[in-house]
Length: 266
Ligand SMILES: [Zn+2]
Image (cartoon, helix red, strand yellow):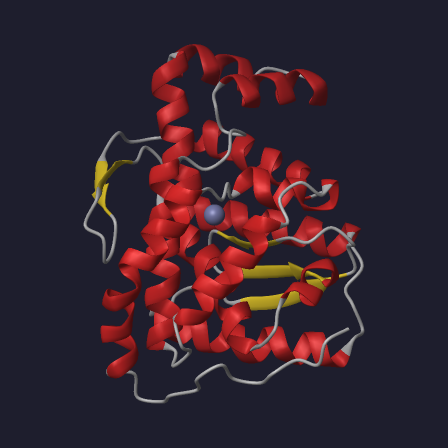
């Protein structure tokens, strides 16, 4: 389901690609290739979200819903994107997963909740996903894929009457379904730690969460989350190295929440 929505998103991005350009990522200052417009990406995010909501059951678990809304709103405020149409929903899906679509639609599955010890660990994950969106990593991946495979050829196929299977092949071919690159993954980690710290959550929780999550890597239920957000020693090391920087944001946060609410073990 998550994958299908991403395919649709990427297909539409590909068709909507217009101007060639570069952009500087907020906070990190990294220069990235960007061939799509943010408005178009957000529109696609909105459409993918509508489809997700139509086809996937939302949970009625009040504790999960209020936790994601509580943490999500704090992270969204820290990301300083008031023009996003932020929404936070928990879906009844067993596989642990979370994402943030372009434009600010944030989802978590019921399956990821048992892995959170507290609000701050959830803030680490939501911050990381929001980081991918703020840094426009999906648009960047697509832009890179277009360049690598020859934009014109990819476009002509994408705008033809290709069936779903064929489209899947094309999307894979242009590299858009590959996992986030290491550069993007580390960048989302940094942005995630910055956002959680600005929102008043102790950034040390990012280290405890990703450490814990990385050790669970072999379970098949974790595969989608792990495959799109690979966790290796280098990534954990980089998180540790960035921690003092994140603490600077934490020190100046207007509200300190520490670990936030602590969840009782299931
Ligand atoms: Zn990631």
